[in-house]
Amino acid sequence: MSKPFLLLLTLFLFAALNACGPQQPHGYTGYLYFAQGNYLNRFSLRDGSLSVVANFGNMTIREISPFGKNRLFLTGTATISRKTAPQISWIDLETGEKVSQYSGILARYMVNANVVVYDDGIKLYAMPQGSGSAPDEVIYSHGLNRITTVLEVSNDTLLFETGESGERVIRGWNAVSGSQQVYPALTAACELVGAVWLESLQQLACRPRDGSAEETAYLLVNLDGESDSQLNLPEGKRFTALAYIPGQHALVLKESWKSVIGDQEKSAVWIHNVRTGENTRLSKNKNLGTSVVFTPL
Image 1 (cartoon, rainbow, N blue to C red):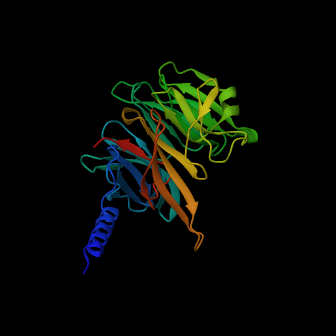
Image 2 (cartoon, rainbow, N blue to C red; image 1 turned 90 degrees about the vertical axis):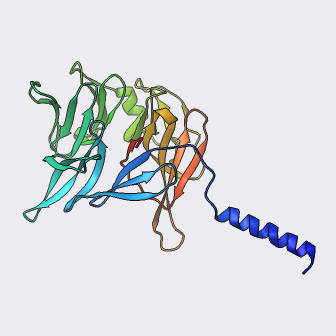
Image 3 (cartoon, rainbow, N blue to C red; image 1 turned 90 degrees about the horizontal axis):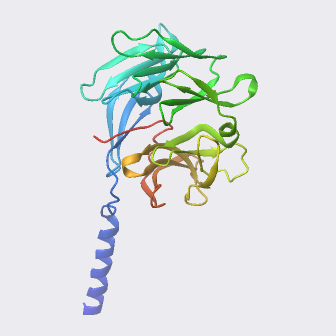
């Protein structure tokens, strides 16, 4: 066998081994918790691995959110006496303890004010935590399931989008003062569904309301509805923003597309670094749904 041939074979094998080896480190760490059916799962930002955290039996989990340091709220539906009912539960990630809290369609914990906000389908409530707390307060009464989403932003403010009389309106409630206001300019500029609050920028990453921009565009908008830029995401791809990790300047996104064969829905996990503008695909063929929670450990 000639020396040139051996050299070419060696180079080929070296390239093949590198191609099959681990991806270059990207520096992102921590975990994303997400739900699939009745399972709570965990995705590693470091290496893209998946693990099952808990099985919630007959509860189909629709959404998860933080509930203090080591707990998560889970909202969804459960079958009780052969009837399907909305349910809010929580899990302690350290001990594995699981508790069915109450009937409702969404729940948020506002840590600074120590208040749980939940919706029973027709009323949005504030429920102060701790001994000697004030009684529950009705924040907003609405038609059946008229609140599409809620999102905590700066200064202990919770945004929620309503759809009364077919008109979309973004409202805000302050957990400390109890005051409310309507955000007409923000409503005109942004869809709250699929939006994420970028704490370090004090802006929302949101899809445009009027659809004048391309379908995949994400605008950067402040609470006054003012926008001077949009995220520089890879062209020709469809993204949904999932979560923001301030300490890593990382906006987690879900890419969605349909396969050529079978027209099946496919997904990938990306991170957009809001400081550098760099886009990194962490994992292909991983579907985190539309609701995730980041934890460092």
